[in-house]
Length: 161
Image (tube, rainbow, N blue to C red; front, side, top):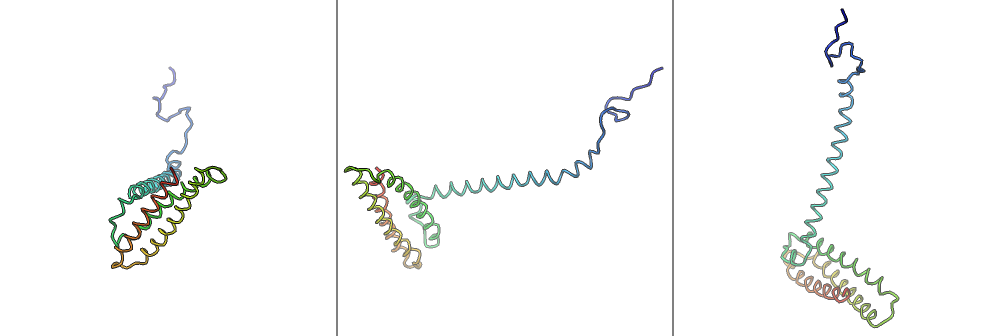
């Protein structure tokens, strides 16, 4: 009679290569966990940064910050700074386009940019006064910032039309 064959996958006399699977898994597990945990942390940090950017952008309008209190002065100033930075970037583009361009329209735009720069300097001074104000002087200082902001916004609109 012939030799009896073991059932498939029994591991007895099987021509499939045997390897120490449990020690290999134990050796690789910490590396897999470390690498997968690192990706998750980075993804979470990126997601948190995106959420913060969205929140900041949503607040960064005058209507979004005009009612901030003295206790919110840091957020108020940060929002004004972000709004101004955005406008400053656009003004730099306008300056680059009009520099060396002859014509009446170019001269008018250059004057509008100069007006913007002056209004921006006034806003910067008003913000410095606001940041140094006390709780009792906050409302008056904020009124001055509001007026300076309106001037900056109007001059920005003229310069970027």
